[in-house]
Image 1: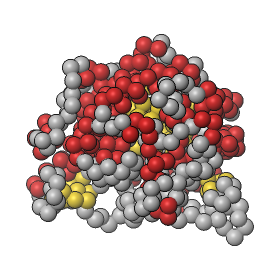
Image 2 (image 1 turned 30 degrees about the vertical axis):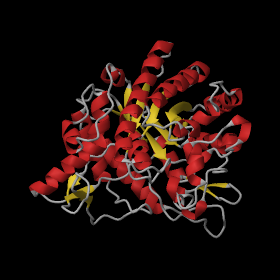
Image 3 (image 1 turned 180 degrees about the vertical axis):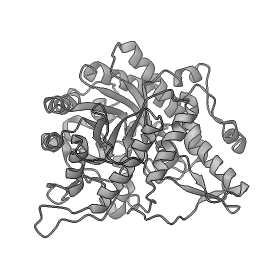
Length: 449
């Protein structure tokens, strides 16, 4: 490591959020329920019965949030478009009020000198599609392509960067395999079918984008993992390889134009992927970048008692952990970036589209500040790892911190705080944390690594 380094002036610094986690206004201006509305309103699914009905109310307070971004000279804001706001019912009619909201948000961002990075799908599937079978049904992918085309037509002249899907692994496996996320189903076959249809939806959306004539870059965001084995024993090495196949190659292979990993199909012979003629070429439609969400590097050990064919478990490590009980492994980010570059043959530029830490943040006695030195240390260590990877030849173009504001953290409700800005969930008052100001110094180039 070399002292005194800064990031290139062209490096894109941003923050990221998701519509259901921040917007609120769940029934305002024509929005209809998503699977997360249904899931969070079902007792027992979310801690303390929390819902995203109000969230941080960004739908009404977006100007305040854009001003917070402007004050630190943020380069980009990654937000997601809520599908139920854009096409709220089975008629397929476009909801102009939904379009108008995102147009106002984008216009405010541009007025502040901030690029708009729009994610088409961050988990809020319209409930009507889940009622018809959800992602395990091929028709959902076709309807997604129609929705994407509407977004391109209505907003494409002002969006600076498009992301088709956020973490399709979570949508497929937390949504349909273990039920930890909406829609809360537990059916391995549905998870495998959802995997293929999510990837098909991505490919169809990219094809529609290429047909639109728009030229802003488009890509996909994945939570790939490249875990390290707990020991050098062959059984642990094999277990880590299986985890990589299931968590990463299952989704990365198709966009590389490859088949789903044969080893995964061999382990689940009764759960075939519903691939139809032409799907492989569609999913491999050329993208312009790959987005990576990175929070930690898992340690995997062989476990003969695992009831699944994976025969593995996440092993403990010595690392300090976050409120999510995730180990803090910044050097894992360095290894991960090199691995992604190698496995993809450096085909695409990379962006870290999420990275952050949940901490038990509290206002200081004055009520006007939040001291979060652990988050600052976390960010500094991960930025150092990023620079090391860039020095090693990784084409990393930008970083989006998760997240701008403390918000609704899915099944954890409002009990996990990832934000650079503290949210008082009673009043929705925003209070910048020390890490917010640290990020400003990094963006300005004043901080060296």
